[in-house]
Length: 274
Image 1 (cartoon, rainbow, N blue to C red):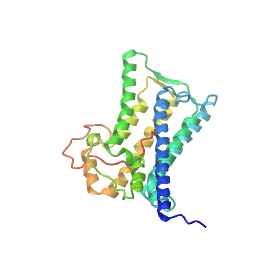
Image 2: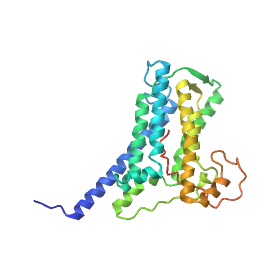
Image 3: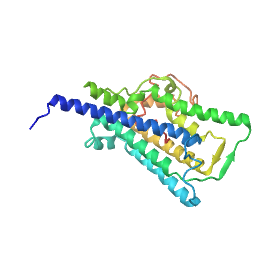
């Protein structure tokens, strides 16, 4: 009976870990790019305005609300430190982030697939200049989302940094709390980008409105939970940051100097709750 050398087993394990991390990231990219089309009704076959047709309004409302709720539960529960401590008893810590990203992306893909059409128009903007402005804001929101991930550490946020650290055989060091760009202006630029993208539309259907309200409610609740975790982890440094930098609106509070002006949002992926 042939015995596989331990070095070969380690090499195989590293290849599998990196392959899993890369696969998870590619699924995230698909979900993220589809999210842009889904929210904007651009190119993709199913969108927030045109999903599965034929369902009565009440049925569509219940199904779409359940899909939003499923995403919110998965996205928030798996991000909590207590869940991570339990979860990593079964999932190797090196792929914990990749697994979180993969499952969040799959839930998003399920929502795109099963979203029901709610076509009633709540409001519509016909003035050409106003439509251009709204589409510009829509694009700016998504650019802000993507840019905000790189202002912290895009590759750590989506699990690649961890799996490639395992490939090299070096310990992964989380970057954590740091002063970076938009994080000097608002505490949650990534979430701010989502909010802008979700609400900036020239045609607001009932389905889009439900999506925007549901995701906005989730974001407002989730950031409170996230900040509670950050205070528990970082203590006074994050408390000081929170008192000097507004959550979403730049300049909302007087700036008295900010020794720490950015925090890795460990509880979120750039995949949209979008």
